[in-house]
Length: 425
Picture (cartoon, rainbow, N blue to C red):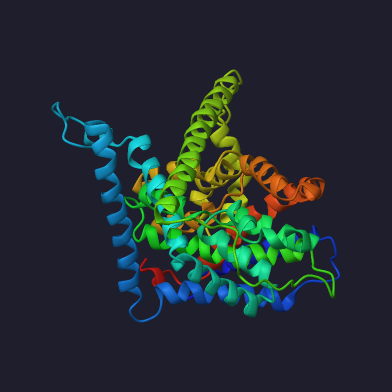
């Protein structure tokens, strides 16, 4: 059933496209066919998982798979850290909630999923899936073979792995294709972090694993569209053919597991360091703001400031105005800090303080690497792979950050425009 809340999301979708068009390098060339195709692909992907007969069984399977991975990871973590990781407690437990320790319950998942992803890539399973998505993107959105493959890889691996996969073609990519690759990398998340996000939300959002997986997949077409709007491809350029070979190779299964584990360790350590630093900075900022007088009867905090700034955007993607300040704060945290902190904050919002529909919409809006910290990662990683184009990358990365951030908001708006009954709400 179509409701006013769905029209609200459609308004947000339209305004996002208008903003990107206003910032376009060539406003005379709006890709109408791509816009219709990208939104159609998003809708079909969401309907395919949540609306088709048997979809509920697939959703249950995804959630069961994530629960199984979390349980298996818990056994390995408890073997190393014992009762600190949730194993048998040597003392009487008076607060079960205190047993959840982020470093032991969430971060180890990144190690396991990273190693598993590398193993599946070596066995060519993940490579076949990626190439399948690349073929779909190539045919439905007119991407060149190299760009289509990079977009597909971003869904499952990450924004630095994708240029490695097509490294042989990086010097042949046009400015528009490089921009597209950066935007999609910022608009999606890696498979290793998907499971971590689902674990954080599984107690507060039904079918959290399915929503997180779909969020990363359907944000790829959104990233492609907004990238093409802001930096259009010049006629007769781009579309370089790729033979779908890859420089991302492992010598054996053991080599894949070992290197995947080390890559996961790097990610986990980086996340740990970023969380410590940024949470501390927020506390410092709130301490400084406490010197100012109260505003509207409450102390001035970073959370309140971000809530005010981003509340209109939260409303536009489909969040009720009563919940928009809280949702706007989460959008601000995602952009200014990291999506990991935003997901932790979302998972900590009491059930009575946020409806399931708002929580679902925010899951899609937050599921992407578009944050200020990722700008440095992008410039560093792609600067190493494309040293001759480093200045060009630096010149477009901030625009790419905005496009990547709006791409996840566009995905949230598309989901918000669909009937809530589709998601069992």
